[in-house]
Image 1: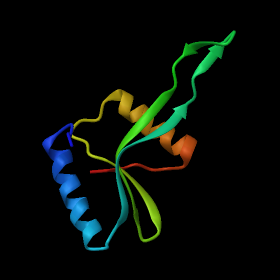
Image 2: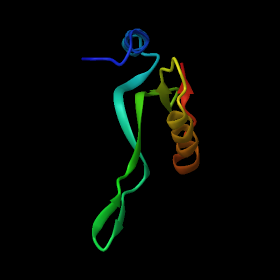
Image 3: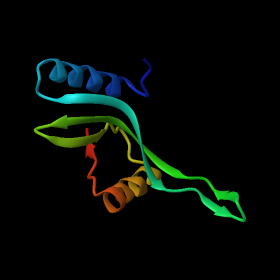
Image 4: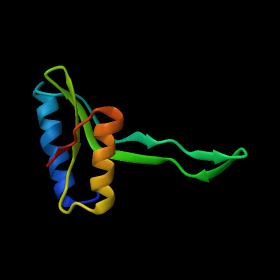
Length: 95
């Protein structure tokens, strides 16, 4: 497995321990969420789809948790965070 940062790797290790201890379940990495579908004009793709890829998704106390390990919040990330809430009703847990 490869990770984007040491911080993300450490968080994965922490979450893996929590999963083994039964505190969380169904831990997944790099989960894509569709924010805006591709746009087509005359059958041709005019604009590609826009996705948000969550660092981690897991279940805790019967609720889905979408988590992103952040060191710096880019403008793109902030827009995608807002779209996640608007489109999917999901508030991203930032660590």
